[in-house]
Length: 432
Image 1 (cartoon, rainbow, N blue to C red):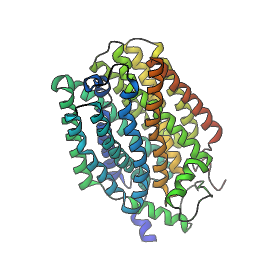
Image 2 (cartoon, rainbow, N blue to C red):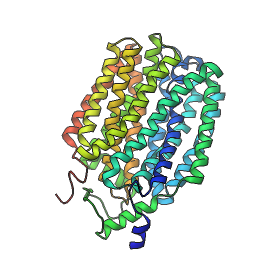
Image 3 (tube, helix red, strand yellow):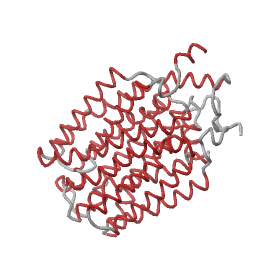
Image 4 (cartoon, helix red, strand yellow):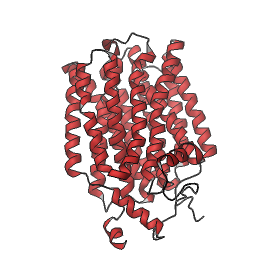
């Protein structure tokens, strides 16, 4: 036991090389999804999507959301059996067809199918970067660790959208997406194979410390309504429905991805309809992604100090305020400011939802709990794509989809404020 504890020391400084390598991995994952955030929605008519067919347009997000949601949960459970690194590599293998499918797609359904593979890549690869960082860091560092992870990923989302926005007019949209994504995927796969270390032993060592009562630090409030060796269904129902704090966190995850579906697809369409070109749209969407990403370096640390709950609620409401304001303002400067506000809102809630789940999940089944949360959160993409597509289609107005999303975020924040406990073990420990 003591040898294992000595070898598998948790903490960012003790595991700095792997911490950085995992951040590099999620940066590459963000670049792959970021390349779609600008070019594809604007050029959807070139793939046969009629103007005003919002539900058809959103279909590529539906396929992505459902697949990523399911694979998030599968990745969490699978990684507890075969390890984090193998699941990460499976995620990169699944990404290889994406560039070729975008290049040779003859209709929008080709893009929809390509996004099935994108969902597999994101579900496996991004999930493992989060899980691995939590494995090797201490509880009081989780806000910062998840903040760094989501900073790297979502800064890359913004950079990917901006880069392809510049490359598309020079090389052609399909060719730009093909070349950009292929280079990113192959580079990330090689780095993962040679430089990433398996982190499952850190989680196993932490679990042993809890079992032997040798864990040093504030005691987390692990749920009592769970067996010693919980199965897949038990963890899924616990996190999804039976535990009030987990349930509140999951619904907030769904709400934030409904918002992100709007900003992924309908925000570029809205900007294009108001006369902006691809480069201008690329800059605005990049500001959203990069502010979201960079702010998480601060909001994660902030939650390590003040707790998770207050930043999450504030983030939901600030994101809703930014979305509601988009149709009320006009001009590139005003929309860029709204994009920055929405990015700050996302930064307040996004890494701290993950940290909250990790706070009260036993290391024995923490990956499965994170996978369950990420299942519901990313299924929010599909829920958002369908509901927002229907709202825009029925009302013949993209603006109505912005109002609808803002209302959802407001309600979600109230529900979490009323139903969730503070999860930070220092502020609400099991001993107290």
